[in-house]
Image (cartoon, rainbow, N blue to C red; front, side, top):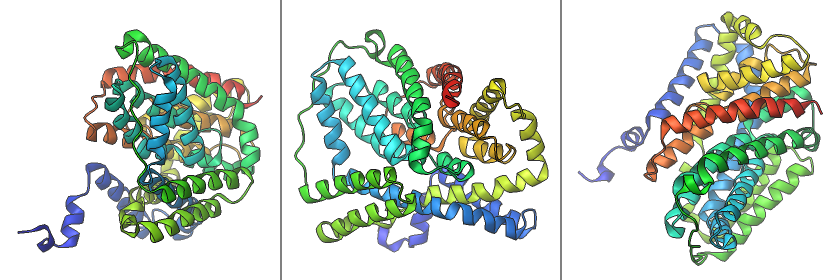
Length: 402
């Protein structure tokens, strides 16, 4: 029997990954909490009201990033970076750090995990570069470079709602923590993955640039990304900025390459996961989790309390994932204690580098590495990640109040 004779729903079910089933199960449990009354309907509605703009932003920015990748923008940048490095690993290291950091800060950490990782891994064999240093650069910076802007991480958008800052004000508050976070990450990346003894080569061979397929799509999508970044920095609402930029890219594809506009562009997996999360966590908070979180995070407003909040965020993220860790933690921190809330945010952003499930970006990164047959030594991944977390969380929390 041909593929066309198989019902569409059966093909869709067959294409689901184990991680997809986990997301669907989480949503089903969340709906069950509402149906059974474990979570009152009005509280569930309040959760939806809070996350609706965030979901709109998330869907739009992922579509924008995917269309930008299809237009070869990321590929061209990666190839040009390798050429700029001229065979020097230290120079390539600095360029890759800048590329991964900017992608995370301006286009969201999931963009780095989902779209930049395959680009970097595809570049590795063409330039005869060891893939693991490139892969570790993307996954660590997908997490540790996600502090600067509200759009960098979904947790930032949630925190923004609590601390009452605009996007420029948030960036003004978080630029120093972000700088410290990237600096610590760079040191450990070099020591464990990029130095000569770890990467296994003295120099690399820059890959020849590939021709751009459609220059109109290339420049329109690149311009849409720049427009999105400018709009965010200018203080425009994030969902409006993302929708406008995505709409520009979509119109270009409607004119130039309509067949590339597929339903699979919509990140339903992320939307299902986040929706389920915002039903399950409030339910658990109503039935004992709030007391547990209060005892873990504490109420100390001093520096020790900030460290405790950051450490709790990092530790819980590596146990249950950073999104539920942040959502549960923010609900027990007093509304006016912004320093403690930002310390929790630091822990849940830069700390999820130890376990594969600590952040959704890390999970997506592991899937991408498997598809590209890149072997990730799990023990080394966890041990180096643990050292990074131990070093980075106190260092960044220390400058949150500066």
